[in-house]
Image (cartoon, rainbow, N blue to C red):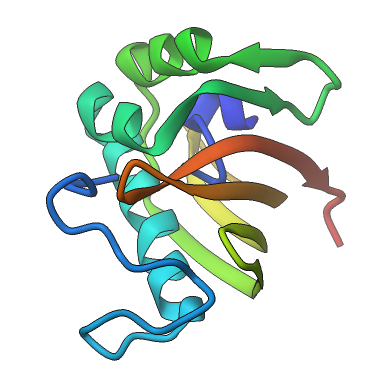
Length: 155
């Protein structure tokens, strides 16, 4: 399963336009840390992919969004949204590990690993990807401008 398969990063939402957090350099009114804001955002993105919610993912992706997948190919915003629309894999388990956030005024770099488990050809399949997502604060919300996924070799 590549990010294209699960549309990333991990995958990958939200009513962000309605409940956007403040810039990452400061905590928002709800008192959430930068770490929690972006952990929630990444989880919402992944959930939106699983339910084929193109509108939710569209709210996250900037117009100039580009993704570099684990096989070295790249995709743009329209291609990513098409992957969300056609997503048809079952993910039985998904867990984020090693989640870090580094804020630079109105830009945030998010790094994490996502372990996913689901059936592939009727057999339990487990895969882990490391992601780097770059968000910018624009139009009152966080938008992802770039993502990169790397498949982690099985242990």
